[in-house]
Length: 254
Image (cartoon, rainbow, N blue to C red; front, side, top):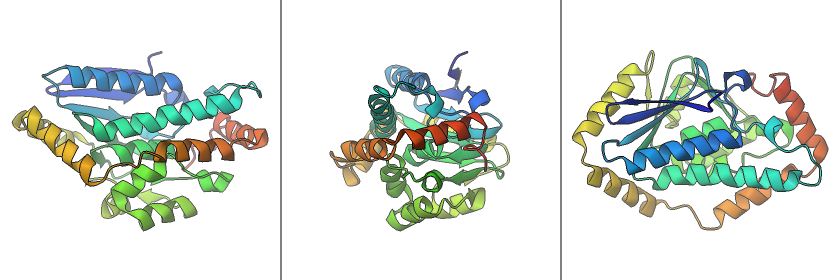
């Protein structure tokens, strides 16, 4: 089964996460497929926009820990590598020459919320929810927080990380986590497509470069994020607990 379902629509490439059986949790193949989708948009002069969508009822629930190596000797390296791949994907969102949008219908949790935080534009349906549940398991959303802080501000992001509070669509809009809320996402997508038809590629690229210059990610942020999540998951018992929750669908529960 393909990790992403891809289709073109005007100047957009729409990449739909296709792992419904694991609530669209991100494994290595999915992260690589998202990078390949970005490659395609950046190399095609007719495309301006990458839209990342989920399944009805669920957008993305973060890292698929069940997909990591079960070998106790190599597991720390696998965790660090997965965290680094995910961080670099989010960082690429901020530097890509194309506009990256998230179309959310349902739950965006943990690393799924990270995709939303790092993208350029996000729109959701009224039934969508957003939260960072990591603290409930003794973890920290170490990779997500730098991007979430850029999007909604330090204190708001910090509060979400500390409390595992769940935001509904209106609250997410109020905080600036999403840019629009409408019934099915079609209206927002249509407006984005119209905008991309009118926007010269050079203008879009210049705006994104300037945004990155105004609020760049510190060079040390990647190493700090990878080290923190790797350290917290160094205890095999903690990872076993998360895997068990994922396997029973509890990690993904709202």
